Length: 295
Image 1 (cartoon, one colour):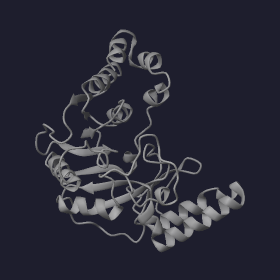
Image 2 (cartoon, helix red, strand yellow):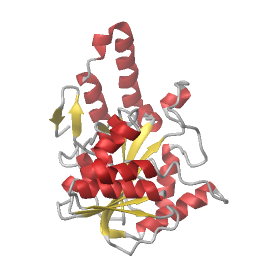
Image 3 (tube, helix red, strand yellow):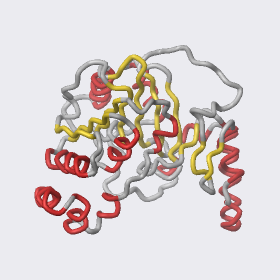
Image 4 (tube, one colour):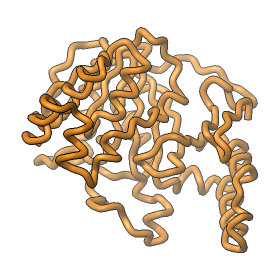
């Protein structure tokens, strides 16, 4: 990382990444629009906190959308790289290095907080993992504005990828912080958060371009009907039938392997709709890249 940062100052962050870590350069330089934005309703002048960004790609995308983005990393050289990247791209992104479990944050300053794979992979410390997660969630809740919300991408301990024995990604395991979806909901409830919405990350926890509302079986069935599973022959037709059944029975809502939770800071009155709200329950990039609304 030190060599990467040294070269980033001399020749630019992108050229440095391609030279020092060529095998990871594509992932580092790629700047996907964060899928969180599909379920956000924030004005451009908002302030966003992201904890555990990695190489700064998500922070850069957030910096293009909002007036101020603060990134927290627990490795000083990684925080420096994100800061260099943001400055060279002229983005309102500022990176700091701090312990995730002891964040030096003022109260009620953020409109949204992003946890991209952090809640289920916090640093290993002494004590009960449940209590560690509770303490972490309480601390970041204090830095949210009363009207703010938290977006957390997590893995599901009871996800169908684990139940079916599919191979894990490199470094992935069933750690002490990985919970069932009801377990995560209980965490949010016990730490004082308000309404919780869960969305299935269809393409996997590292790609939030397609989010499916798990509390809306009609939207899930609509997605299955739009998808070209039949193009994969009899295996595709069987998969389509299984997904339709999972949507109808509620199994999908319990066994989705990767999920984004959108959690409001405080309990507020919630309007109930007979259909999905076009502003917040939009299926983005479904099949052919179009946005489908009013499902």
